[in-house]
Length: 448
Image (cartoon, rainbow, N blue to C red; front, side, top):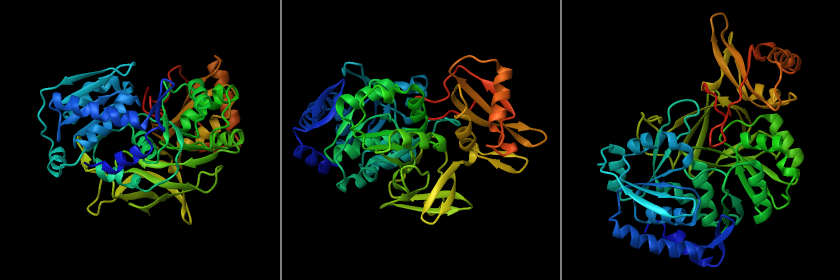
């Protein structure tokens, strides 16, 4: 039983709420009882060790108890959510899924069998170990989604160390490494995960108020939307003790505004990748983008200004791409960083850097300035090829109110003078009505 230690802990907190779903609490006893029901159901459907099983759902009691049961039975789990509906068939094919268990809005389930044989050597390697597995698909925000195959046991090992018990909102989705981390950290420490029906700022703030949420794990993009909506003014958020942010570079202007609004809330930058898991981190202070990363089971090094990580919990490999690890197990994260003693500051992904005549431009730095312009709701900065300078800086804007494009361009360039070096000021400016973030609330820099 690969998670006997976790089930034993959950039994100690039997009457404590483990999940709040649709505003109704479900205890640890409820989850353990549902696991027994799932074991019987999976026996009836002949679903056992080594089979590849997709869970289509969110943080409902049945979905979470099924996830625990599938780990216990040493299956390979492929969590998917409605956010990837357009890529569903592609993902099922890549992962060689044999069983799909889907959940509706009332937590009712349906089991679908697929006539698929597992052929991927990495999956066979995991099956031969007799260990449970996890397949996570990257967001594809800058290219094609990759399928990372994990041995679930090393991922879960770090949660055996007791830590803080908290009431935590499940902002990050169940098919995201951050969502998996949130769920198991909480269950391993007797906390409560509070599910939300949508990631709308008002819904999130209302949920925090109603259930006295202490921890909000989220992304810089959502925090910017929270500022824009001013939903934080309409609800009592005094229970909040910790806001963690990751998945993308935080604009400094957004961090400062969040700190001003929540001066008594700790702001913590997190760091993790689908390929490696979530590293432990410590921000220099709540108003700083400098932080430490590492912790037990992780090693880090900086090579030519780029962060490399070696992790005990690293994936076995991609199911649909070459391995990103070198012969010693190190992974080039492609994140360009500055270093100050034990602290680092992430400047951006190497692939996002814009090279203007030999000068490097980091999109997040430019976006941090552009987000301060009146009437700007959101912005994405990307590079575009240019025959003279190699690349130019371009900016796509979302506005609150319609504005004459030519007048808006003049305002943007006037605002940037004195705030940005001339080569960093956007040469091409456009206005779009399309959202510029994914369902995971991560900035989308590829063409809309």
